[in-house]
Figure 1 (cartoon, rainbow, N blue to C red):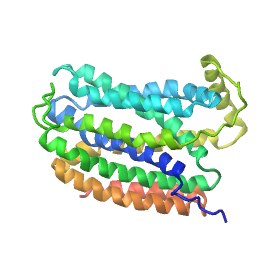
Figure 2 (figure 1 turned 180 degrees about the vertical axis):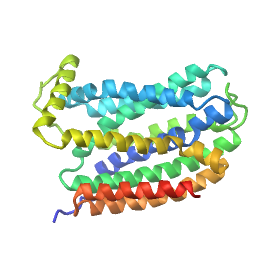
Figure 3 (figure 1 turned 120 degrees about the vertical axis):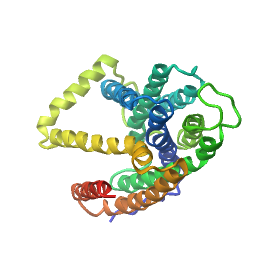
Length: 320
């Protein structure tokens, strides 16, 4: 039996804190406040948000495979992750400074920030194998997810005073005192601050020989060759297709839980924060349990149980 790595190692803590950091963006911006700001505060159709998010995901689909290949060959995952992180934080933090009424400009900036947030995940996930290996990586990954959920709780708590009472008394174009947009600047700052330990404490593992380089065009060729090679490994292509639909369903829930809780259930900002804190604590516990269990059972079996759980809970929401 493999011995679990110490989660108190500095590099593992640094790697996990990035999950803590980016989940603040995921919870506060993607789930809780941005779409509600567009629909409830600006009075615009939710399609504005949906198109902006879809556009950012299209950029991810087009560019990330090639950038990932470039990163692997250049051994600069930390550099790419840092650039995507700081750009995301700046992007979301600049939205409150845009002159009021320029909704399309705000949506474009949101799309760009979200592209950087999602793009950074490619390099963050790859860095897992710089702090762990083999089955141990499953345990560390579960710990990172649990720390990430803690980040979403603390992030919600820290920005709630700004939402309910204004952002440090600043007079910004979109609001006078408080409001959902007041969460944007604090969320960007918290994201960046809690991401810093990864860049300081994690040493990127060198796997390829020095000087092994690849150009941008070659990287796309490599991705295409990788797709064609899936024919040599039965089941890989089916897995990728199945994962696409699963991830799409999860993303749909994450992106709409805030607007659903507000418009359908009728929660206030404070009510919603409490509701999400309770659900997030259960997710923290679950991620730690799954991280340990997955070291002893087949991953497909564990994933199937998780998907069944999602289906049951979402169906129960209909009758609530």
